[in-house]
Image (tube, rainbow, N blue to C red):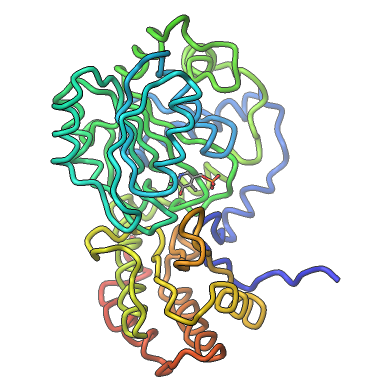
Length: 395
Ligand SMILES: *Cc1c(COP(=O)(O)O)cnc(C)c1O
């Protein structure tokens, strides 16, 4: 017997997709040198630039965002380079493996995984380590439901002439960012998080200084590799060619979600994420549950991480939600496994009062099913009570 599919994917990415995205995704597969595809790829790149709110070059690498993150490390870090790696969660710690793989020397600035990096600590670390060339940071730590003050951190890095590599995979769209203003040299995002698209691509914004660092890579610039960002510069950016066949259908879906985000407008798009995240936190607290992030100001827009109450097992809660009611949410990941669960709210299909109400209502029902005392409606009510700004008509 095959497992029943869920009614709602309210996990922390990949997320539920809008019907319009699915419709656009199923267009006929074009030959990648068909003029219609070249045009579509160019338009998609232009839309991506608008979503990133940047005048920097953007590159769409043809693999899940981990490709973009590894490509960033492989392309800029030369053996012996010192990299200040900021760690406030699972993905931040994970990046250290890439730094070491490409010969970098890590200087780590870490905080507990329920906290965020203090920009003044970054300043002190850069003062104490004059040879640092690069800084790596995760904007939105999806596994912890926290976010780092990347804008302040990027501006400090710039003061020290340090280039930044920013994992904003679940940050783009959830917060109104700007690579230029925020000092993001290589920024990597994914379509399957706040943009509400399908997984399979790395969306990157590259500053002129980052291109220079790639050209200066020792012993030679990284070229002729699936990990090479310079290959995309040489082919697509300079000659409107591809280094290999792009993921044609994924580009259709990307074009669609970028259009949808821009129709709403990036400010409102990010604002909606903030509103739903806020309402979700109010709902969770009203149920007597505790948020995982140490302070509410550092809670992420992409997902709400909630401490598992004493005596409630992760598998029992998520299993009940999924099996009895068809609602998929996310567990703790890596070393956070068994400590928390996560309610996703990313992209137009998840980020809506209707889905939030369903998510919290099923959470209430499932908690009661497994013996946690629930005042029915308390979570949903508290969430809806603060959603005073929402209006589907505002575009
Ligand atoms: C989703 C995500 C990635 C991509 O990782 P996957 O495990 O392949 O989904 C990277 N960084 C962050 C912060 C993410 O949220």
